[in-house]
Length: 191
Image (cartoon, rainbow, N blue to C red):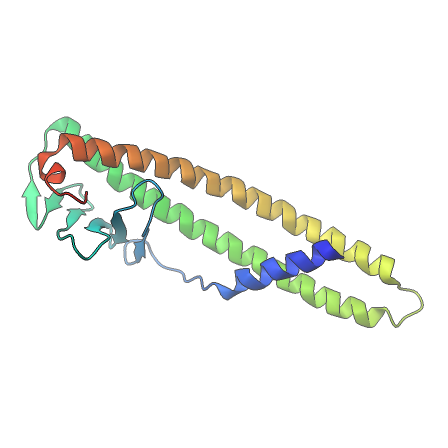
């Protein structure tokens, strides 16, 4: 029964987060801190990527448009083919991370709803304990069975989240490469 209580707590906190549906072209999503890129804020809005300094004492903005054009402080940067590939990779990684994160959010919400349903089953089960044909062992067995199904789904979701972590590592590598190889980005102390 302790495990069921733990699941209920996890479900409660899962339901406390708000998930909203958006078309990713019309939506804005901020990545805030990626562990590896801790001094920038990365936003995805209307198909463009915006990279800004995280701290107020720094200024500037980098934008990668949906057609992979790079702008630094509002000025278009001319890129060679190799640099253009890095900018395209960066944009696509941010877009893919955003989409994967939205999917994980939805799946997490579904798991949360199932957990809430498990809570209702627990309440109904307590009422059923009044019946001589149903005892605590029956209730525990029923709740454990349902909790195990939810746990399996949560583990699958965790594996999915690990894919995002790998994408974030690729993003970090590309970020560093762009900073090193594109002089307009290298001039920005915060990038």
